[in-house]
Amino acid sequence: MKTGPDFNLTGYAPVAERITQFYEAHPGGRIVTELVSRSATEVVFRASVYRNASESGPAATGWAAEREGDGDVNEVACLENTETSAVGRALANLGFTASRLRPSAEEMAKAARARARIGRQRLAVREPVVSPSQAMYLGDLLNLVASAERLGLRAARATRWREHLHTTHYDDGALVQLERRLRDWIVRHQTRLMR
Image (cartoon, rainbow, N blue to C red; front, side, top):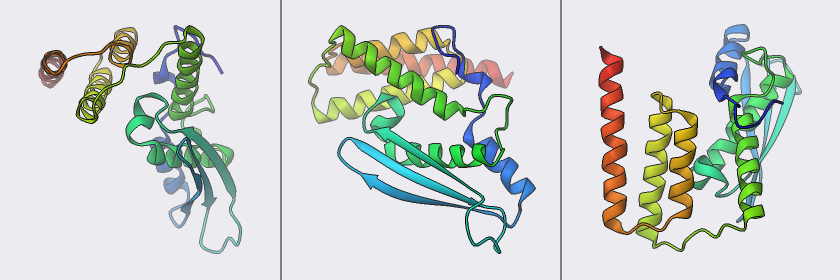
């Protein structure tokens, strides 16, 4: 798998595309997921893919494990993200890759999160202690960064936003200012896209 500073997730297909391909090829098929384990630190899912109702066993399976709080997505939706990754792996094992590259966009994002976590550990970066309300606000800001990135915010700039949000302590007024900046950027780019 290619990773590094020039790595671009747009070369990898989202799991949703694999699911669409699967149901187009197997309209009577089904995807079954199972939560294998969930602890305070990790979630593990298994996905089984059946091409039709008569199959007694799955045509393919896929496993995924994610760390709670590891990256933007897993801070707010670790359970859902892990299930999606397991489905993507099962569909890839059945031959549904939706791109020439086997790993899904979700799997490559997971690898990027792991590299970032290792980098933070090496630098011994301590995340600031924030109140529960500030934590929720930071989660909302991280979601806005993700929305902006989908609208064209450069990956390097989005990464800088995330790093600052994770490592800098902001008071409530500063958080409001950051939210306004992000929302203004999103509105400008949505308007530009509608033209």
